[in-house]
Amino acid sequence: MINRIVKITKKYQGIDFVLNAYTDEAKEFFLIRDRLDLRRRKSVEFYSITVYKDFTDNGKSFRGSSTVRLHPTLSDDEISSMIERTAFAAGFVRNEPYPLPPLQQHVTSPRSFPDTGAILSELSAAVSGPD
Image (cartoon, rainbow, N blue to C red; front, side, top):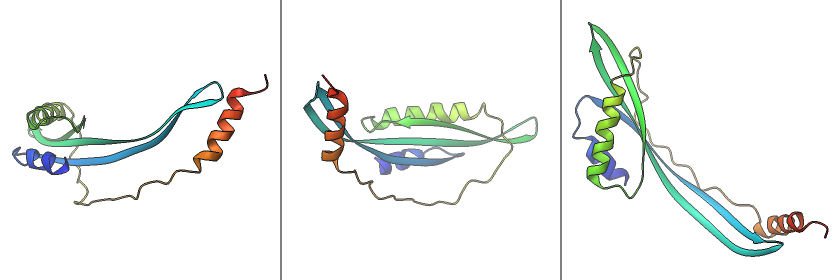
């Protein structure tokens, strides 16, 4: 997905961008009274792109920015359309020009989950409470 987004942004002249990609992981428990009915672990990918557009108005320079969230199921045409609209929106933001951070890549390790057995026992006791 990241390679697709980068490839699409290369066709636009006059914009810079920052692409963020992250994964949200969670464990979910569904209880019926004090009994565990369903347990699942989910992992969802998110992408957001901030588009920076430099422009001048009446001889004064500006740098505008706008951010959009991209879903992994979007087609290339949909991504392209969203980037175009985001670049258009950035043209309405009139910030003084400022430098962008250098190109870098940050990778974080997946987070570890605590012992779910202990949490489930505690949760079950709290939900059932005294009868």
